[in-house]
Every structure is written in structure tokens, then in C-alpha cells.
Length: 372
Ligand code: NAD
Image 1 (cartoon, rainbow, N blue to C red):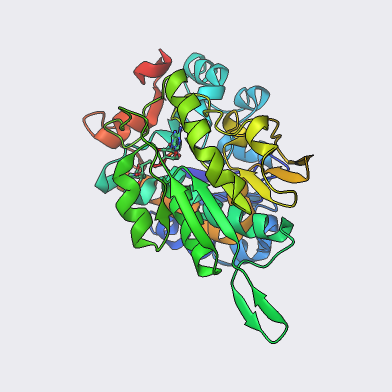
Image 2 (cartoon, rainbow, N blue to C red):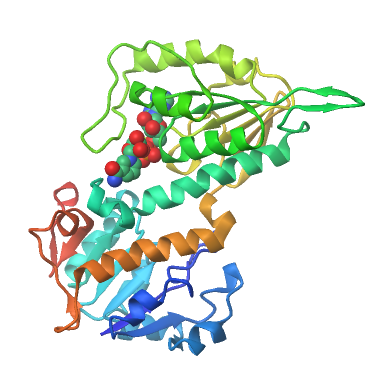
């Protein structure tokens, strides 16, 4: 069995799917581990360090052509799929909602496809949950990046030169990323408010020392996987109107609102932005899935009425070493849980809830109902 780890093919993604500190778990399986040359460059880990612990360096082409299991942080290009031999498995973050062609081609070419985005939200699978491990780091990065663009400091400072007031931060959407954004902003001394349509998070917001903004939108709620339900147009309008006052008094607004498999809701429009103070910052963490903020663009800072609107892709990649460490642990946990050492292959047991949910294509068939 050859397991090959590929470099990211996106210029804004410095993460690696393997990490020196976690590689022992894979080596212990007895498999041959290959890696694409320069895989660790984005986190300052040299090829030689991987080679010294027993991994083999190869070109991308060699990895694609020979591996039985390919680990990747990004969906592969269609042309690259043609190089992969049949019966091999691709395991990674393959952005399935935007890559239906990849799913169809894997099925046609008899390549198994495992999407780590489809790890179910059950306790046993938390150690494999790439969305959570990366959203957590992304929440941290969003605060650090926002703070860089603010012309004030975040903490209150009582100095001989006068008292400096703490910055006010408003976090919209309190999932994994939002909670980490709140915690990070609090650690930096900001005054933090937060809102989510799932009112179950109020207690979590309070426990971090932030204030939950109460907005009554009628029936909202969450799915059995803990994701927010989509609001009606009327509810969105009400939310916009009622949260406008909080945006106006905030120095930093961080939006994290997402809907699994659907475009993110637009929650901040130009009317709200125009009432905010010049110099304030809006960080749109949903920019890659449609955006929560009118006018936000991926990898650009837009200025409107003196308000900076920031959108950055692959946020967790800004802390690439930790992001790679967490990701590699997520992948390793999937592999080691389903690797059959005697047969030296993955045991695709569709009775298992994790296999059933995360495997999109198996033996030429699209197995996940969503994509059939
Ligand atoms: P997500 O990335 O899908 O969305 C981010 C947040 O945006 C969510 O909290 C959502 O409720 C919120 N949101 C959606 N529409 C909104 C709107 N109009 N206004 C304000 N907020 C809005 O969510 P997530 O980070 O993946 O987490 C969702 C929940 O699942 C969390 O409670 C998390 O703790 C839980 N979770 C459970 C597991 C597990 O049990 N294995 C794993 C990960 C997350």
C-alpha cells in the first residue's frame, strides 16, 4: 500500500496534509508513505526532515500515478484524475458541493472518493472533523487580521497619557469559528457581543464573558447535525434591521454565518455599512461561500465609507503549521480507524456511519445520496 500526500494546488493555501509531529501514526501502519516534493514549504519543514523519518519524496505526477491512497487538502484538477489508477482512493477536502464534475469522473474512472467535509457530527468522529479543526483556527485568524486593520488597540489601557477605551467587537454566527473569534477577542481585551439564530449558544457566549445579543426572529432552530436552518426572507430582513444598531457601535464586526451546502446568508448590506464609523472593520468569514457582507470579495480589502471590508481565502492557512498539524491528525484518524493491517487496505464498511457519510464514490458508484 502506497499512501501519497499532495501539496496544495491553491496559491493561498500553505497547509500540508501530513506533519512531522503526527506522521508516526501512518508509519506504524506499515504502509509506504510518499510525499510530493516541497510539501512542507509553507510551514517551513524541509523535504529532508520527512525523508529522514522514512518518507519518500516524489513528483506530483509519480504520486498520482502510483499511490493507492492519495491525501489532499484541495480538490484535484480533472486532468490530474486521468493519471490516477483505478481502485485508488482520494481522501481529503474536496469541496464536493462545488465539484460535482470531480464526483462524476471518480465514478466513471472507478476511483474511490472520500470527502472529509462529510464526516458526520457524532462524538466518535470529532477527531476527524476537518471543518471544526480549521474553523477554530480561522476564527482566531479573523480576529488577528481584523486587529491589524484597526487604528486602535483592542484592550483598555489606563496610561499616564490617558485612558484608552477597549475596542468593541461584534461576532455574528457562533459556531466553531465564532466561538474561537469571541475567545480570541476577549483574550485581547475587547468588549465582545455576539448573535446566532441558534439560541442554544447563548450560554456558550456568556461563559466566554461576552454578551449575547437577543433578537427575536420567531422560529429558527438547528438540524440534527447542529447546523442552522435557513431563515425566511422576512426573518433575514428583521435580523438585519435589529442588528444594525450593534454594528453601528462596533469597531470590528466578524461574520461567520454559514448554511451547510447552501450559499451563506447576506446579513450586512450597504445601508448598515454606511451607518458604521469610518475606520471600523468588517471581516467576512463566509466570503468563500457567497459572503455575509454586501460587496465583500475574496482576498481583497474593499473600502466603503471609510469602513474596511475584508475577505481572505483559506484563513486557517495563515497559521499553516498548526492548521497542518490538526488536519494531518484528522486524516490519520480516518485512515487508522479504517485501515486493515492484514490486508493492507482500507476497509470500506458501509455499515459504519462514518464510512457511509464520508465516502462519496466507491467502486465506481456514487454512494452518497446527495450527489446521485
Ligand atoms: P457553520 O459553520 O455551519 O455556521 C456558523 C454559524 O453561523 C452557526 O453557529 C450558525 O448557527 C450560524 N448562522 C447561520 N445563519 C445565521 C444567521 N442568519 N445569523 C446568525 N448566525 C447564523 O456552523 P459550525 O461552526 O459548523 O457549527 C454548528 C454547530 O455544530 C455548533 O454548535 C458546533 O458546536 C456544532 N458541532 C458539533 C460537532 C460534533 O458534535 N461532532 C462538530 C462540530 C460542530
